[in-house]
Length: 264
Picture 1 (spheres, rainbow, N blue to C red):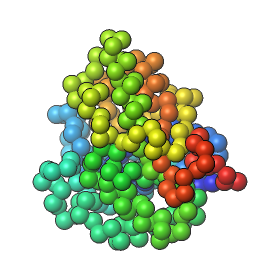
Picture 2: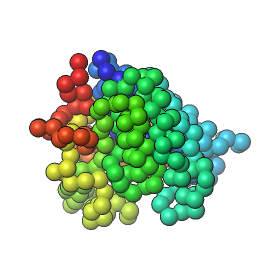
Picture 3: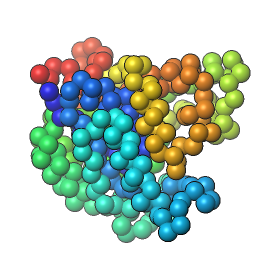
Picture 4: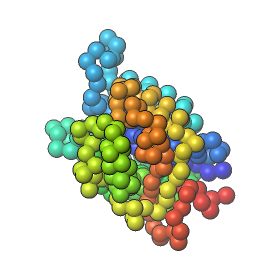
């Protein structure tokens, strides 16, 4: 069996793009390790959601531990950086935020975990962080460098299939599914990558209940009324039943269906 280290920017990032892959890996007997650059301090939360004296940072850590349990992860680590906020916000300039982190220093922290785990596979994000979030871009930079330092030979970039997403959203809209105003199908031209760029497609249909439960664990960020949890099961399955990756290095001769192809 292999060890998969999945590197993410904030709590809940593990659930939405990679939750099915992680749950499937754990069920198949692989060791799953989650590493987060930040604790998501600058996430948005409803007024009075937190308990008196509770910080969002603390709540999101607890949500992450619950999600990890649901997904079957064996270890959770935080690198200790502060959430950088969205691109162009003042939080980008904070000296302790992840966006401002020295890549070599942050990569050394992650590489130490990769060595401890003797990791076979590392997941990061694509080079523009899927949708341009500064912390996601930094995950790519730091993760790629950490793999070089630790000698982790198999690295996958979690991404989105903009062609498939736009097609499914258009069909959902035509069927009468109510779409949030900020999820315009025509606004996905810079999201993820084209279908042709994707090397690896993991079918996680059998793990949709686990994936949704992982999302639900992050209640401070993903409410029951959210797009993710309120959409009809049919469209949730179509939108989240596969997870997309780009394998770094030499492109596989055929499109892969697992992060572990060829690993004993």
